[in-house]
Image 1 (cartoon, rainbow, N blue to C red):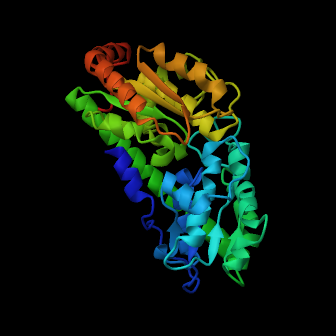
Image 2: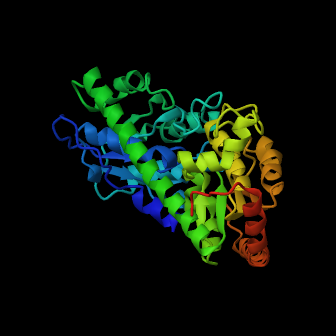
Image 3: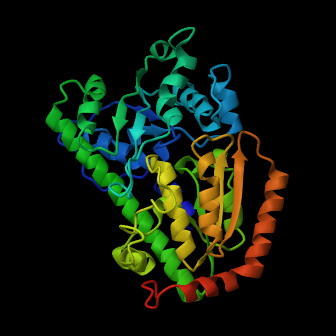
Length: 393
């Protein structure tokens, strides 16, 4: 299924060829947290182009209670955002939990994220808490003594606006020049280009997989589910594997970040609205969300529009971390957009460190019950409301 495909590709070598620099012996540790979940292939492609073999790029493991207890205890900092607080465990695992010590802990402060909605929305900024998290978590490892220096690890957290390709080489060069002496701006530009190529190739593969799932659903007249969440909710320790439990009931699961965006499908789904002047493009979300400056939020709202129009998406699952200030204003517009189309909508809006297995199981069984009873009718009604000539077959 799609979830397993994403997980298996997380650490895979990208298709781009290594750059001209001599092979580097550096071992680079990157915390598997926050917006790394949607940009990891960029960093793999970039470092490979700079001569680092993929096997020397070390990602921390998925978030878990054991990780936080073994590696993050006593190094936490004050923050109400649980995904941010979890970074302490990831940092500690990279510093203390490696059989072969890393040379660099690389934790970029991502100011903005690449998005397929770029150019159709106001901006693609990251959550301010998420962007500043590396400096926040660093404090837990330096407040009494510099753990990184003590362990012989260079800590680098450059600020980078990944939504603006023109400035990325200039933003990354000062930090990466510390890792790669003699690094020229031309080499930096080439590495950034390779990083984007790697990320784009990954996204294309993921979107093709999503389309293949929808084509199977259309051919077999079966329903699938769509998860609307932030990229880091793919982390089993943050999303509590709720989507995997639902998938076990036989329903394919899609994620909003990797929905297909092919021209033929966009024309079928949004063409009439564009010609009527209701929206400017298939990726215009101003009709449901005029304040479109947050990258992850924009994609969640667009995913709700997609779900409302896609007949074989019979149910939407919304995942949100406890007290997420960025997500709270979107609760109503997302739910209304989905439910007005007759699509089932269920939300888990308070995910945190506690995994209430019993209550999650009951809710999953409830959702599965409604899906079994109502999916066929939902698919039929939504299909009847859409134009003929569906490109999914």
